[in-house]
Image 1: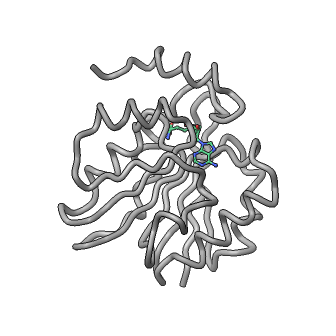
Image 2: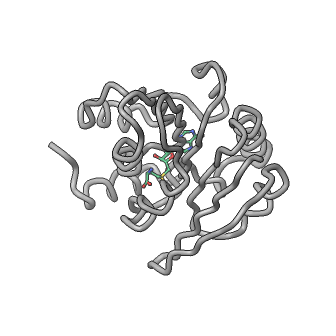
Length: 182
Ligand SMILES: C[S@@+](CC[C@H](N)C(=O)[O-])C[C@H]1O[C@@H](n2cnc3c(N)ncnc32)[C@H](O)[C@@H]1O
């Protein structure tokens, strides 16, 4: 049975230093962060920070039947939960950290969707995640990131060719960075 928002909030709070949040992102984030997903057949999408899979479900709703999603999550309990909750052949749950993406994915990626907490991740590790993602993004592809501030936007602007930020006026404010590779 699916977890309630409250059950998810308890789990996130217990693991605050890795989740970086007390609750799941809002429905507005689930929709906005998926606006740059590629259309068409055989696309590869990578998600960082799957949590209990709220954004994952939206990605699966948006992509074609023969596309794939690799969802990275460091917390093994969250991985087990999503494996039981979302039965979809297009989803590959990876219980590993985003910086190890190359161990699990061969070839290029059409889009990255990320909700990992850059504020709690050491700067050099975060910068490496941004760099590795850029290198494996197909031209025209996006890295879309949600955070609770605009503070890290410049780090993405340094690497990606074109970036813009959308602010959702919820409590707390939610910032979505859409970063494109030309
Ligand atoms: C803010 S929560 C977001 C969860 C969910 N996607 C949402 O939108 O509410 C961040 C998630 O990223 C995971 N996480 C943190 N650091 C990570 C890393 N380096 N690689 C993969 N997942 C990570 C946490 O365990 C947590 O589930």
